Length: 407
Image 1: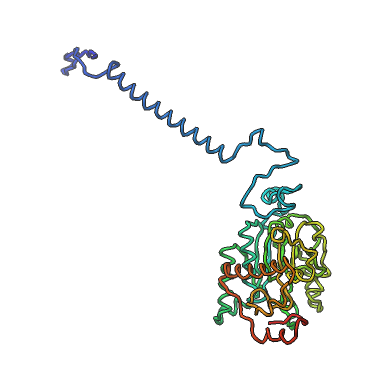
Image 2: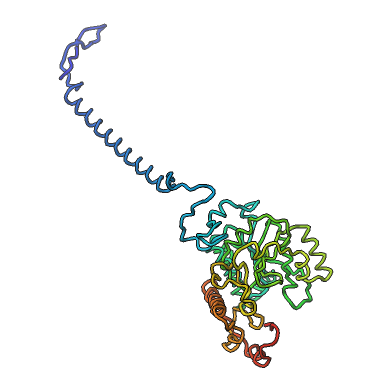
């Protein structure tokens, strides 16, 4: 179809104006117009359909992620159903399947420290180069178990000065491990000055645990005495959420009346000032801690072996839950008073003299030392230290009696 156009040629003031009818080939509504409309409609329909499909896929993916509960799977608030979570090995509270069991992730989600997780911390105080690796082993387990608490490592400031003055195998290893603690495990490094009795032979008096009350950047801290294996930090995370007005809680196991190698502490300026006065007046670290200590948290309030000393596997084994030892124990303090420590390659004769003879305590004791050796290699890349012949010989001549020997 064509449109007629009128074009005529007239004279107007000497100018020609065209005004006459001619045939125009400009297409209007007709066959070609209908074809263009069909093309537009087709593409519009395809775009709509593709958009609809993408929308349905997105909705399906969102539903799969949030897993909208149905009425049949909903559980009552009084008896929550905890879905199986293979990544959660340890539990807080009773064993899985028992009355009162709460999965760790759910407990932590509902129970926060008053100031948040950045205001509570696991703190390691190392006084010997030998124990730096043990601190990393603790932090490695915290990282593995995804503990939300902060981490701090205190060590003598003189080590930094030594590293600047000279190089040695021991110093270089310590600096390497300190850097690894900060970079891989997010540990805050805190070099400290001596504050205790400087004339004391025991480093625990020169760098006393009581000095940790100065860490007022944290509302609450957990201190683990080296050497040891951290097995279940999740129950300890739960302790960091509890409310207590005590300055220090000795988290004792079922076997000992001594100050525990696992302490829950509440740093405070006034408490620290009082500690400084006592240190200046000749008080020992043990005397200060005993004066502050509260035993409000122990095995009567928490199930399982919260903390176990390896020496108790021989002398007080009846009080220990051996059947569920690895699942119920939070911290194993490796301290057999006639042995140099788990960092050393102990002569077999000496090892068997101190090993518990009754099963399964003896097998657990073996496993503790083997786990320590393997973890020391895996985390720090360190083999066991050799024991001097003179050290081992003193036990052979003295028999089974005698006290701990300093190396």
